[in-house]
Length: 245
Length: 232
Image (cartoon, rainbow over all chains, first blue to last red; front, side):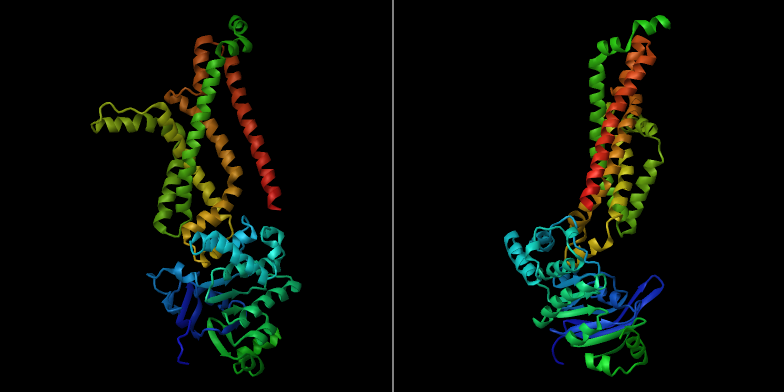
C-alpha cells in the first residue's frame, strides 16, 4: 500500500522491570481499518494497545501515530492523545460528574469547544448511543452497558481519528455485551479507524478488517478474519482458537 | 486549701473570668483555623510530591514529612519562636522578633502540614488508577487531571481524616502556651496564678475543650454518614 499508515509500529519492546511483555511488535495500521487483537491473557495485547497512546512508556522501538513519533520524549503527547480515543475495560467514567459533564469536560477544559458547542455535540452523541435521556444522570445510576456507551461517547466527543478499545465488553454482564458491540459496529461502518482488544470472536469475524493474534509478546499471525479464524497457519493460533471457539 | 476551694466556686470563677475564657477560646480557634488553612496547602503540595513519579519530588516529600513528624511540636515551637529569630538577629537584623501568633501558626502549620501530606497521599492513592488514565487519554495534562478528576474524588474520602486532624491540631494549640500565646491553656495558667483554684480552673478549661471537640466530632460523624449515603 502506498498510503501512509495512521499507526506505524516498528520493533516495539516494552518491559516492566525485568519482565519483558512486548518482545518485538511491528505493525502498520491504515485509515479506516478495524483491527481486532486477540490472544491469551498475558500475551501483551492490552500493553500493546496502551503503548499506542503512551499510557505505557515505550521501552524501545518506533511508534508513530498520525505522523507523531510518540516514542520521543520531546513530543507533546497530550496533543496527540486528543486525536486518539480510548475505551477501557472498567469504563473509568468520572463518578463525580454527570453523564453530560463526563463527555464535555475534556473539550471545554482544553478550550477546544465552548460549553454550548460541547453540550450540543455531547447530546447528539448520547442520542447515537441511545442514552439521550441520561444526560444529567450520574454514572453510579447506570448499568455496565450504559456506562460503556457513555465512555464511548466521551471518547468520540474529542473527534478522534483513531479509537482504541481495551476489552470493552469483558467487565459486562452477558446481556449487555450486545448493546456495546452494536455501537462499535456502527462506528466501524462510519469508517472510524479502530484497534480493539477483545475476546468476542463473533464480533471480530463480523467487523474486523484484520485480525492480529498475539502470544508471548509477539504477533504470531495476522490476516483477514477468514484467514485467521478459518485457516490459521500457526500452531499457537490453532490451539488458542480451539480453546475459545 | 479548704478555704480557697470554698472561696472560688466554679460559678464565681466563670463570673469573674468569662471574658478571658471566651477571648482565649477565640484565640485557640483562630490559631487552629489559620494553621489548618496553611497545613492544607502544605499538605497538598507535599502530598502531590509524594505521589509524583519524579524521584526527586518523592525525596523532598519524604524528607519533609519524616523530618517534621520526627520533631515534637513543643521543640518545633521553641525553635521557630526563639531559635530562628536568634539566628536572624545574629545575622544582623538586631531587632527581629516573631509574634507568638505568627510563630504559633508557623509551627502548627508545619506540624499539621506533615500529617496532612500523608492524608493527601492516602486520599489520592485511594482513587482508582483508571481515573487518571481516562483523563490523560482524553488529552488532559497531568496537573489538570489531578485538579479536575482525581482531587475532587480524593478530598471526599479525606474529609473524616481532615476533621480528625483538625481536632488534633486544636488540642495541640495548648502546647503553644509555652511561647506565651494567649490561648485557652495560657488563660488557665493565668487564672490559677490569680485564684490558686487549680481544680476548678483546669476543670473549666478541660470542659471547654471537650465541648468544642465533641461538637466537632459529631459534625464529622454526620458528614461521614452523609458521604457514605451519597456513595451508594
